[in-house]
Image (tube, rainbow, N blue to C red; front, side, top):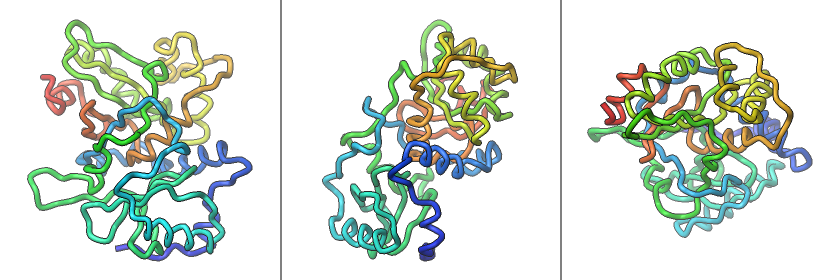
Length: 281
């Protein structure tokens, strides 16, 4: 299923300790460079919208289910390849011999029992009525997981009774994000609250997203999604934290919409279809 990661190839993508913050943003942008067109591939995925207020992945603690032997083997193999980031845990998935790895300063990934292979992307379990991510059982267990603060989201509340809340990773330069935003009034009128998280798909989008999140009136600034020029003073924006969270959740394109219960309902959906998909119709 997987192939060994060549030393030179992986080393080119390793995270610099001297400039981790900048490099992490660049590396995460590589993951989403393909843009809005990736939505269809993710439309059937199930995963978790995480449930804690700490959004810093570097402070994660090892899960009690972590396999120490796999962690040790993977750490040794990475160090041999010149990659020094610390492996936190390697948790068994539903697929025999495959582990979900959490590491300091790196997006999560899969590895095999030998710790010699790195697998990026999603592993989908089939053969049941509903497709499921093989690590979903681990993501839903009640150990420490990061969640961005509500104050770090751009929120469009439901009109009247709130029937459902969705989280949407979004980008100012994404055409399908704009289509979703054009239907915001209809979505809110159906009792659905939308909480935006930043997910710039290119380096050029980063300043726009940071300007939106640094604006005093984020909802007004979010009209920048429709092509308006957004100006705002610099601030300690949560954009990088949102990107790191999206990488953990397997976000590949925008918009990427999640329910509160942890189901990823896919990318852009018209308001009526979105309401039906999340049971708010």
